[in-house]
Length: 617
Image (cartoon, one colour):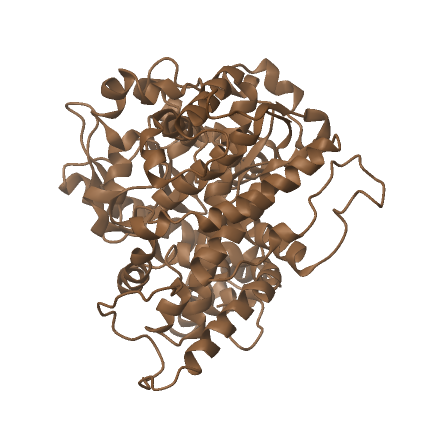
């Protein structure tokens, strides 16, 4: 929809597409009444007219919808019975008696704005089991935090589950035809092209990380010396997008060249830079806003144009993003067109053939060898930019949040850094292989605060989810059903991780608990998904986060969370303290768009450490 040259509002396009379905019930009523008047003039039908006829036409729409839902329920129940399966449990009608589950949608909207992530979902899972069905907008959606069922979506029944048409419609304005929203041959095309850029040789060259980490840490150190707190989330978002764009496209977009923001109370015009405008600031704001709009429309599925009737909000925000990314694409195309003696090939997507990646060649240069389609190229840039910035930024943000709350873990981690690397030397790929505690800290952060807390698949042609308990029947998933899963909820289940599941304890990845919980069931830990669509950039993210943390801890020895630097809208609600569990311990609010983030930023102060000599280490 978003690529039509004619700027037709999305709501109008939606109505045009669904007009036949909307007209069929009233037209059926009209034909029925007309035939009654013509062929049965003495019958009761011939007496119907006026307001009664108008009422019947209006009533035909909800009646047709009700009959359609009932028919679908009967067909699904019959198919489940034939296969010896059952339908997933659903909440009682009393929990949400509104048509289409509108009350549930309102509750979800409120939870997204001010609640704790996945809290509503967790409560339903506690009462209905770890896989249940909920009817939203008259269609069934399956929700799960059950590792065996997530395993079916991602691996064992991969061929039965895809991103699906609903997801492509929802994410089209942001991700287009890129790898994260694509299915089938187009997904394989993108996957094949990007894989060579995440091999060991490429992700273990740390020059890019070192250069941008030095710039980010220098800016933070200057602010700390001036006595200001720094929004660490903003800093690492800039670090990761600059690193990712240089790694993938050969040129960073320079977000670290902009001054850092000051706390909200720094109103002096000489200090506060938050209101200054630039292309880079517009990019950062638009990038985040586009993801936020996309996330909010996801709960409406394919019906999202009805809530963005006159304007595609994501598409509007993407203009600021493309002002920065499009020149990168143009330059890459110009480089290719300027090459001499190159065989001229037909425009469009070329067959993916085995081809060695050239020395110094970027992913974009490599991609252009297979397609000249600017839409595919632009979408791939956007997909990789989202992944390159947000995933690692989320890991680093929540790792530093946890280190600020657990000084003993910070001390132990810093000791490993100094023992293995020292106070000045740049870390290497081999160093990270030996730094078991660093990896455990990152894994524990990924367990409690996974960057992508929720995800979705759509069942293509019907499937059976395996029974969990002996004697149970499998769960039937009808064709077209959207299936949402939450690794955030799964990662925090005490029955999967033990009684300390809600505690931040990196040692669980080093001691006997690994063999007790994780080894027998590796699908209980899925921060980067699994199966054929497992994140190609997993090791890239681990190395980038590890590199930045090592460089940071070589410079700083203490970390403090500065709550007074947070705007009031970002502070933890007082009622959280009374509700117990992990929620009562939180000192920041967190929410999710495509990835999890801290509301209004993670404001920290750090204390510079004394220089450590090699002899002291």
